[in-house]
Length: 102
Image 1: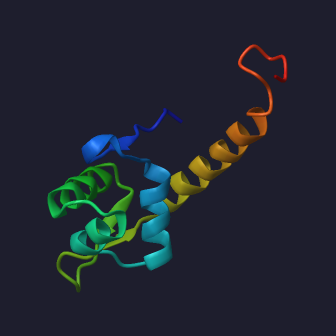
Image 2: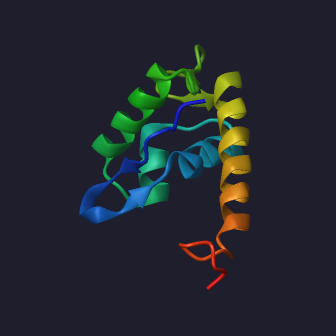
């Protein structure tokens, strides 16, 4: 699977895709204002993130609730992959940059 980009926000704050998808998983149904408020970002930031995630097939609009989104099956699979990858990266962090353990 190809590497997924980190989604950057205002002021140099970085909110990675894992955090955003995890929020969708926890809340089940999310709107742009809710997403913006949770991450302390602007509404426009949230709508852009939702648009990107939707184009990637990671979230899908709810047909019975306009402006509300839910994690898709692909989004769930991607989130599980990212979590496993992050866990693997965490186990390697005990090794120094040159593999010396310092």
